[in-house]
Length: 378
Image (cartoon, rainbow, N blue to C red):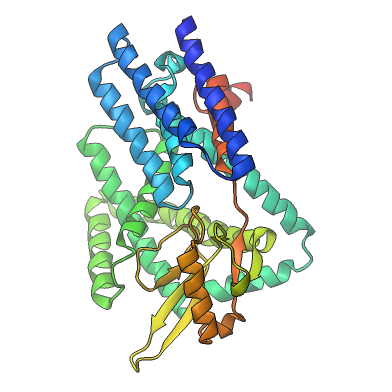
């Protein structure tokens, strides 16, 4: 690589260092840092075009692709706006020669950076939760709560519908890959299926879940799955694989991890003690009844999904604002939250700038997804 390309890498890491400092100190990433990196990344891509090392088509794909992923992180409630802009800028500023040994989709900087952020972070959190689980005295109570919550009639029906939905999404993606003549490797295909399932679920979350909704979506997924199967054995083997994947990822792992994370990280705070910026660890949902009465329920969720008018609060990296706190305090004064003892679970505020910076450092050191280097070592 040239001195200019090394300078771009140094600039990216310098911005990451400053973002870590401000995020840890003030819980914010200054616009000077995130927008400056985004501006510098855009200029670096234009310079690469001038030097003949890239094309306008690739620049457009990189700009909009990384922007879409950054927005998805924000939309799902994982990143704050500053984190998303920092991620976007990093995707643009890395020189293409850094990934010269890679080919195909794994040479796309946004995908590389995403993998280098999400996988180490997930492994670290899961390892910590596993450590806490080993040390916690009430393991049986956690497992009992898990089985109680997931083996009720309504929960089982919802799991069955989500399984059909998951199979339908996987089948639709397979059709899409064949249509555009793209054959990603198995790991990337798995990531895309899981991501698409979560994305479509979130897109459909504002739609009322009526019997007509379940009938239409369920029938479409079953029909698509049956039509795509070349034979009955192929259909059964595919169904068995997706069933196992769904149970492991979305039932066992997700629910147990959410429950354990709630015990390990969350704090219960009285509504009158809430402060601006606190991040809820649960949803509070308004449930109207046919007789006109209204009650409020708590629901454990993994991502923010506050588009529904009946969702009072939901996990959001931006945290609670003064208006939302006032609304909760009014509900508590009216006795609407008495069932929860006027308390709400609050999660710790995670500083994602250091996490993103570690992902950027891994990207530079490994010149691609870090797990490829690990596979070479072992």
